[in-house]
Amino acid sequence: MKSAAGAADCGGIAISSSNPHKRTRRGHKGVLQLHHLPLDTLSDIVSLLSFKEAARMSVLSSQWRHLWRSCIRDLVFTRETMCCPMPMSREEQDREAFIRNVECVLCQLDPTIARDKFVLEFKLINTNVQTHVDRWVAFCATSRVKHIVFDFKPGSWGKHDNSFNFPIHLFINGAPAVRSLCLMSAYLNPVPGFSSFTNLRKLMLDSVSGDIQCMLLPACSMLEWLSIVRCTLHSLTTSQPLHQLRYLCVHYCFNMQKLEVQAPNLNTFIFGSLETHPVSFIIDGCLEIQEVTIKLPTWRSDLFDYAFADHGMANVPKLSVELAIDSKVPGCAKCPSKFVNLKHLILTVDVLANDKYTSGILRLACLLELSPVLNRLELHIVCVLRTGEVLNRIEELPPAREPHYHLKTLQMTGVYGYNNLFILALHYARTAMALEHMVIDPEAKKSYVLTRDAVEEDAVHWGRRMANEHLRGRGLDGILTIL
Image (cartoon, rainbow, N blue to C red; front, top):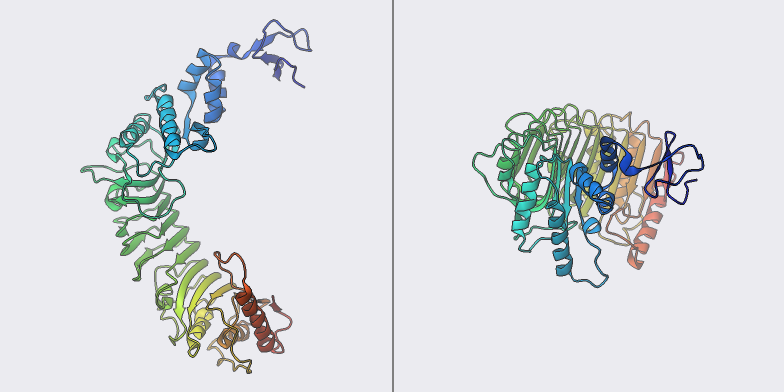
């Protein structure tokens, strides 16, 4: 156990920050204060401390303060590190204190010393602090910061008309030091001759407007991770293949018209659209693709054919799709080619249902035909709550043209109200020769459904009754589970 003086054993030498004339329990060994250590050792110690810990250490002595100024590599400016607001403090007071503390720290630091990280996260949107933003970005550029984060409204949604102008022109000659840039709630003003970030590996843009396509992407040939969320983005195209890109997310961007990316080594692709029209998108030549997630508007017309069209995803092993289908629309997906490598499909379907016409639900029967090596199918149905159709014995669909020999697990949720949902379940079971587990759950799996009211309780109860009536006694008892 350490002594009350705070001594510690470091390789046989007792080190203490208190009285140097005291002895440790070993007696024959002297006590060495921290400032007796070599400068490079002290520098290593300070460099391992967090930003907040290092700042606290800097008040102990002028030597520690000098070390902190020169050795701290990670600058993290958040409410937690910069502010200690009173419980009833006003937002304006917090903002003024935050800005004052950030400026106080930066004015003590040598901007010519290279830094690893600069993080600034604070609600500054719709305020007149552009001059401070310019100064902070200039510090990043001069200090050759590797990893940069500017979030001016953490956690918020939507477009911002009064976003800050991010002075990207301060990063000259391709800013070779910058490895990652995360920018939230900002505006990118076009700068003639800007050469982009030549060594950028990670780029995250959230609620950013301006010339994203021309400003950031042309020269970013080293990009490995790209996320563009809630931005104003008319199109995203690549003039040349991005060979290093492994992760691509384009989610809920405004005014989106077209997305066409060449990324032969892409592993993960996420695409979400809020547009009322289908957005043309294709990921070209992605032979290494492992997972694709597609989220489409669920409050508008049928998008089934669009979702399963040829978007360059034929080789993906895992596919998650969220869409809406119109229960009155007959037929099957007009997919020109099959998903030849798809093994796991997660499909969330909002059924735009009409009580008299629900045959459009049966279009989902073609999923096995489109995915010949599918191993696991999760089908999550969301439809209007109702007590259910009459419990007449249902007629099965005609047999599939070819049996399916790979599907082992079938999970269907939200199965209530419509007989065609159970006809669909039976079709899957009859077609899948290797099926081992079939789980039918009448409760809908939707993230925004927090509790079940009486109407939903009745629907779930009726769905369970329908499942037992339609699926029991059909030779499925060895694999069927009704929740």
